[in-house]
Length: 393
Image (cartoon, rainbow, N blue to C red):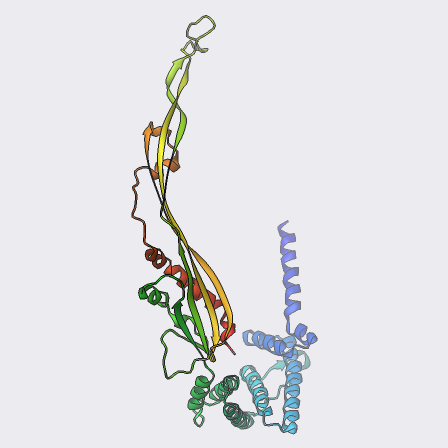
């Protein structure tokens, strides 16, 4: 059984190796994977590895030719933007060669020859392509920036960032990045108002706005709680309390009886003759004795409920509202307490929980609204977070 299991493991390992080896990748036309696989194997053991060397030789010559042909085509095309891809192709060649060079030369024993793996000196071409790619990206960034729109500024930002990737200090690229970033921003002002029939303390409005607006920010959107005259806002989000409806204070007294059957000691079992019955060992037979107990619960329920309605509306810089999200928050005050008469053992778990409580002062209408402010704030934050696409363009 163990021998069979061992054979199965060997067979599976062989199949897996065959499906991931360099020759497998060659057949699939995946020359990049073939080169990588062969190089990894040859780094570990460069001897007696003819199959890996041959695979590397074939894959490298094909991949190198493919990359050089593409570079030649792009140069003939003559488009300035082609230098970005040309630089990328030279960078690929350079990366391949840096991986291959440390394991050269490679000797193929069965053919008694060194592998035909020629490396190119691409340093000068790489630097030239890098300079021309950076120049193109910078010029394109300036062209986009000159359009003076948010979307073009964001594109310009990407181009200048690429220039920065090529050269850490290229002309005034840092200033261009900052300029494009500032121009590409959408600024959103959050405003809180009350249009309900109830006068709400400023403290509530202040509390609603006490969340970290920076947590809403994305790369191209910035939210503001405090209005700044120096900023031109693209959108305004209005958080408007439109309804506050608080019901009356209510007290409801009820009572109910709870009963339970509990054990009350033991009693002797009598036989047919009225004598105490005996078990097989001659002992008196006893059985549990039960009795019914009861308690009356006097329950008082204090209730005061209300509804607070909120509209979250999105407006453009011209004041036009284009999207509104309404939601409501239920305001609830409830208090239960109770007393009882009778046997405490008859009380249920639920009744015991309210026994011994006491009445509480009813909250004012304003207190109920204030208590709901944290929930309203969190709902507003989540709603804005989930609809950031409305203020992205």
